[in-house]
Each structure stands twice: as structure tokens, then as C-alpha cells.
Image (cartoon, rainbow, N blue to C red; front, side, top):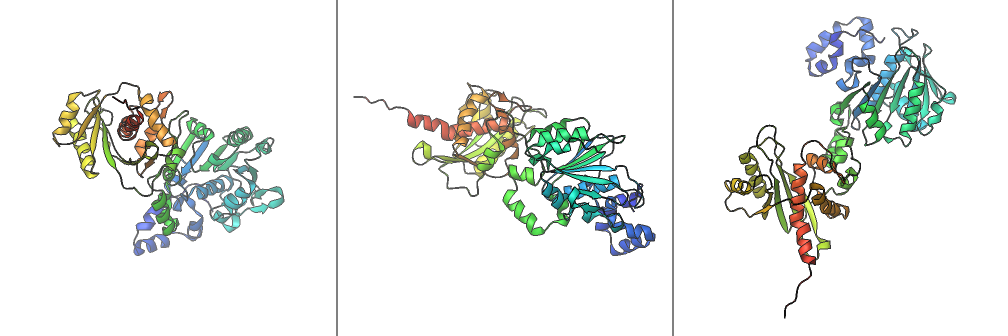
Length: 456
């Protein structure tokens, strides 16, 4: 029932069918012979989304990395079908021995096998495998076998051998590296054993190492890609709660957000700083970190808006990062205009700008757009890391919050380490953030604590 040479109109059929007129749909269905018509519901090539179809090439590992509900489980189950099924129910397929590996036996059984998108739900009646609970395995009519394993027991993979494997939610396995290594030794049958990994990404070394392997291919999709099969209320709720956050980027967009070793900021720290409602602010500052040049290959001009509540003693002060208004490949006039627009948009009290690169020109070009803007020039006399550490301490104390939508800024923050910045280019957005918080929180606190000299 599964064709090895799917017609081109079937391979791209789902997208076309969704936008076809009723007359076109009728014409298409009437043009199918009886076998093709009866097979259509089980032909995943017809219904699949692009990220659910195996890439071409001689890959060893296919990683399907996506957000929650993006269709990863269905893709994994259908890939297993494609490996074990032959042209007819009793014909052999490309694979005869398959490993199904999940975090626990229960999760393999309930999600990968019996789940709504699991292997049994995807299999046509004449090819549906039998579940042998006592032996923890699936057996197909053609004799192919899929054996179940738990990532909690890596040693259980020592001994068996396979020509295919499906690994689910690898990124959350407690003993991920051990289980993955044991599976690699077991994947040794056939001329070209392969494995599929379906996972929502997390910052774990085992996943990052797999992605770096030259024999790995990756397809990626956000939750939104599978919206036709998801409840509208679910999408609305998760967008509302997690859109524009680092957690949302991981769980909904399917992005791998890496925390660099020794980073001054981490994903967990920034998610803990997420703000639901902006308080009444005492002061608002726009900080600017201009690029050294102004052409298409220039670094970004960091423009960050931060407000603060500075009532009472310094330990009670709180700050809120309101906007990353940074611009890229901008001329001095472009970034100065963007900074002034951000200043007025937020009703800011002051603009601070680093002048190490541009000197007096920085203030001059800003005042072309607003001659009366309260302006303070700042000059860096310490390295970026030393300037950033007092600001990172404010985050550790829970005294700085973030609104949503600061993705690029937060990425730069998570690449600033105790050894310096480890990203490409210059962390201009982070520099601007540091200048803003230094102006609002760090320097005023130092003045507050400075001993007062009494004169007679």
C-alpha cells in the first residue's frame, strides 16, 4: 500500500488540496484508480508537511527539531513505517530490526506506539503490527520487529542489534549521552543503518554533539507549522503566554538556545526575569552604542531603552528593559534618528551614548534630530566583561526584569562569559544595556553609598 515511487502530484498534494476548489478536488479523486483511492489516507507523502519528510542523501541521523505539537511524533512513526513495510503486506521492507527508545518504557508505549500519532494509529489495517507486551515489542505481518527501550537503562541496549532506530525527546533524557552511545554500538545491521531523533530542543551537550556530526541532517518547524491539526484555543493561549520569550522560542519555535559555559546570563535567569506588567517608572534612559563605521558591513548600533523605579535605598531599586531598538547596517543619521525616536516613544529622561569610537561626532549627529535632548557622553575605560559584571549582579539579585521580544539582545547576553564575549561580531546591544543600567542603577548606587565628608 505504500508506494516507493509516489507520483509528483501526490508528493505535493496536501498543500494543493487545501487550496483547491471543490470541482478540482472531485476531478482529482475521480482520476485515481481504486487502489490509489483506497491507499490515499495512509500515504503520508501526500499529507506530510515539508519538515516531516526525510531529506535526500546518505545521512546517518535525521533530527526532527520542532516546537510542541509540530508533528514530530507523527513524522517519527511514519518513518518507521517506511522502513519496515514492503510494497505488499507480507513483503520485507528496508529494515527488519528497529529500536524504539524513549525516556521511559511507559512513554515509548503511550506516545510512540499507542499515542494519537504513534505507530499503531498510523498503520493501515493490513499492515498493523501486534504489540507483545510481555516482550515489549511490535511485530509486523512481514516479520519486522521493533523493540522498546528506556533511556534510564542504557545497558539494556548492550547486546541487541538493529538496522534502524527511532529516538524520541532525546534532549530531556537524564542519561542521554550513555543511552545514545549504547544505541550507536547497536545500530550495526544492514548496508546503511539509520536513526531518527524527534525532539524539542534543549541546551544539552548530547544533542549539540549530534547536530555537529557531518552525517546528521536536520529539519525544523515551529508549533505554528502544524496549526491545522491543533486546537485554536491552544495556539492562542501559548502565543499569549510564551510568545516573545526564550522559553517560547525553545518550546514553540523549536530553536536550540545555547547557554555558553561560564556565561554571566543564562536562559533560566532571563526567563525568571520575565515581566508581566510594567510598573510606574521613576526614570527612563535610552543608551546608544554606536558602530565604528556606517556601512553595510558595520556592527549593529545598540539602542536599548531601560526604565527604573528608584525610590528608597538602592537595594529596593528595580529596573525594566523596555525595548531593544537597535539598528543594523545604519549610517550615523539612521541610528541617531532611531535613538531619538525611541527616546520620544518612551518619554525618556536622558540619552547616554558611548563616545569611544565617534567622539564629539556622536552628540553632534544626535542633536541634528533633537537639539534639546538631555545627553550624556560615556567613555569605556574598562573591558566589556568588567563593565558587564556589576550589571549581571543586578540580575542575580532579581532586580532587573525584561519585557518580551528582546531575542537578539538576550542572545548576546547569554554569550558574554567570565572570559569575555564568545559570539561573532561585537555585542553592541549588550553594551547599550550595560550603559543604560549603569546610568540608572550602578552609578547612582555608588554615589548613594559614598561616605559624606563633614566640614566644620
